[in-house]
Image (cartoon, rainbow, N blue to C red; front, side, top):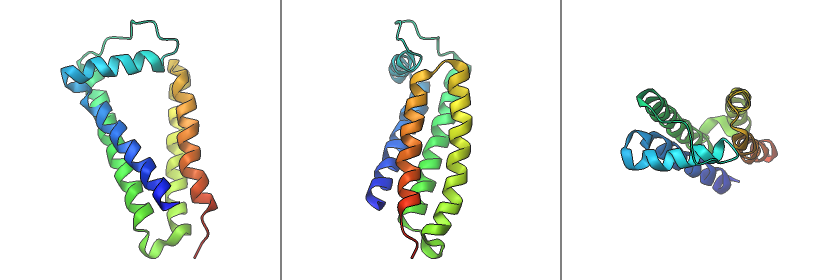
Length: 134
């Protein structure tokens, strides 16, 4: 389970870096392409990434990186918390992210992100719930 959760943290961190790099012109093009797919169906005309949007993407990417590193630390080094303590910390935070992100994704029409959110929530929550307390 630890290896799986560590891998998920790596994917989250890489995604955060990709999103944060939207402020760099070569990556802006890639981010626009990804956003075109997220707002299904792709139409080749994603919304422009103005300065404010790029700032918010950089901020969001930084938070995603921080979140992934926090999760990584909790999963890899639970210390005296043990599985139950990690679960008590991670599940409420994970659920808060999930609910808010799902509402925002639905409200803005980012329907593909709904499926990504469900898969990510399950990929983290299921192992946390299944791991035995020691």
